[in-house]
Length: 434
Picture (spheres, rainbow, N blue to C red):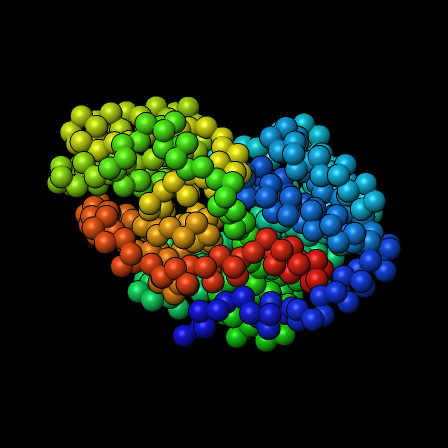
């Protein structure tokens, strides 16, 4: 059994006493030219870039930091892009690819489309690394490079990257059983990891999954595979006013609030949740408020609202939707408002920011028991882990956690879990290992 404390300095190759001298070495290396490459636009990608840019600027790291993003990123995250002007002495620059280049990587309706998109992203990575004459590229989503790295292709500079979604170690988790499809996926991932670690251009493989690096080290003892803490900001409670949100959404004071947050779609388990509500006794439903907060496509909104209407006609449950983008402070306020956080992902692979936000807010999660999420809920006692694909299990989970929420989480372990994913730890780990 691996220790609960996953992000010790030893595991992260960080000696806290050595950090100042390492930063000084960075400052003295005036010719360092680093490129961050990330064409994704979702919230956590923007947050990662924000944390790294702020760390670079605050610590006055030497050299130049070119951050290659898509036009959509520039439009949606203007506050992050503006960081380049907040640190004028730090030589941070955002480089936006052309609209034509962006157009050829957007279509991903089929598996073949995704393969072609990833190959085109690799071509763009190589193009901009050569164009900007960088000596090192930090690939913010290394999973998209699976095919070119498996084929042994070499970029024009050394690279490091964040590996988001490994599953080949899931068989070591409690109660996990792999299907044939999953076994094939795991075999493919092992080939990718083998080829990537043997690519002469690879510098560091950062693992967003805090457990997979240990499996890698067992097979490749000399590999530079380093766990990377998925960053979460600890809320300052004095500045938050959850009661304002309760009044805004007209939430009944006698209801227990179950928050479903994020990009709302089928993978979040919204449809299974709504179906499970139909199976609950009416006296349980009278105690529930399901608060759904986050952006959703027009078609998804229509389908969800249609299901909500059917459930509301059959059960006395309060279901409130807020299909809008929310600011960072609002995110923290919603998690403070919640009594329980829903993380009913359907076969989700990798880490979950929802679990981190719930732990930081000291709120129990009703979570999937699948993969890394299920393992972390068990190890850190973050809440109740269930089979989120099973309607009866969801209904039972809602009832159990409603009746006795304190029985399913440990506040001290939740606090430790959140602290191990502090924002500075994320940025420090990256820049001390490039």
